[in-house]
Amino acid sequence: MKIEIREMMAEDLPKVAALEQRIFSTPWSEKSFSTSLVSEDTGYFTAWVDGVFAGYCGYLRSFSEADITNVAVGEEFRSRGVGYAMLHAMMESGRKKGIERYTLEVRVTNAAAIRLYEKLGFESVGIRPGFYEKPREDALIMWTKGE
Image 1 (cartoon, rainbow, N blue to C red):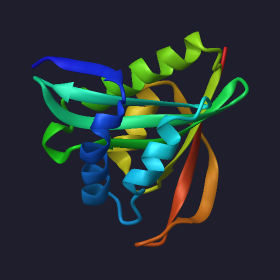
Image 2: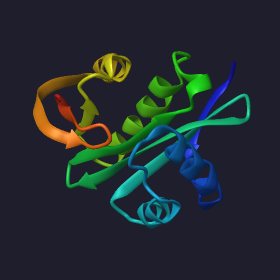
Image 3: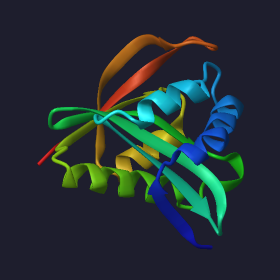
Image 4: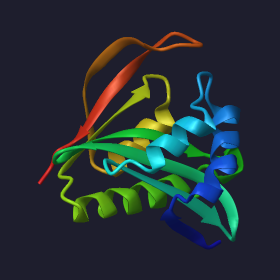
């Protein structure tokens, strides 16, 4: 299995939006991704397994910190190292651009994602009550330590 990570391009947007629709109860639109893709303060990446689209992730930067806004891996590619490879590559790219710390929110019940984020150096720092809708659920706030 060969995992390739690359910066997201406009031609990836239909695949990205389709995966977003399949996975999330309140998905971003293709237009939202398109707008984010051209901002100087964002970084978006895609993962491909043996040439097949497998997932995407992205961040919004504010000075030396960034909020990871999107992470999605297709169901058939989970637990195969795709999420780790994709996030690691994205975070390394951001570090080269001066990002020292990352933050994100994750559903408190998403144990697999929490384990993945912990492997990448994230630590739990609090709870955002009722952050998610459909179903309503709290979010775990996670941060990396920084440099």
